[in-house]
Length: 332
Image 1: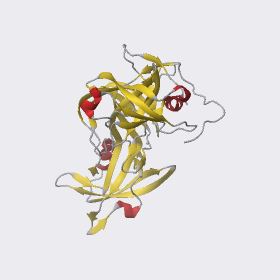
Image 2: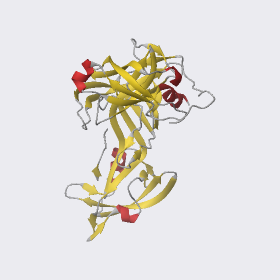
Image 3: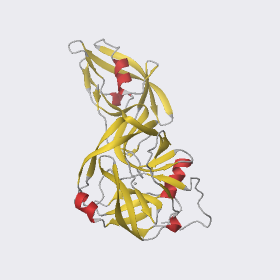
Image 4: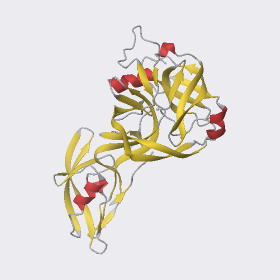
């Protein structure tokens, strides 16, 4: 078996108000966070041909292909690479025909996987590339103290193998230390480099949506700020701030200028357009870099949104999502 793990977007207002159930005040985020989301089983991300009994065998020609989720081997449930490996290692004939249960979307079916075992190096080949999770880093936007929920990232976790939003089962949010960063340049995205602190669990992830990830938090810092949040109609063009981490766990604020607002009646990631005008940030990163997604935007003392995208051709410019959309997703 070969493993492949993939680490780490204009309508008029309705006549009636959008109803968002959230606390009047939120705890301000800005923290760098480690993200780990898991599938409901082990996902097949691709296949390759192996030689069995003098002929080439490729699982994709025999019922198992990219996007399938292996959920059991011979009726034994598997949800991690280790569990799958453990079950397949039980079959040590030169050639093995192994019953597996596959899920794809809402459909479940039974298939037979052929493996080839080597008694020389005590390994097997399955013809499968597989993964059980996606990991990465981003920025926490808010905690809602009434519902004990959080929102982060501001955009979806994308499955690059499937070319779609990742269909996750669950996940964990961890603390993270930013160790360094690569500045942005025209048409070249910058990036934060961070270490995920797996012994510092913040909460559980249960939703991956086009405007962020959401779940319930377990712990919260003692010195955290509490701020009111603003509806779309309260936000205006002009001066605002973003909160993010560029060194270790230190959250700092940087000034931006909101240049355009897109009134929305349906959720979308690009409601706020802005430009970075803080010389401190520009001298460090040249603008918005990867890993800042989810950084809260604050205007007039209220949380108004979160960073979602950078314009790579001009990294001082970016987009943000309205906070009321994130709160709606967090607490539905």
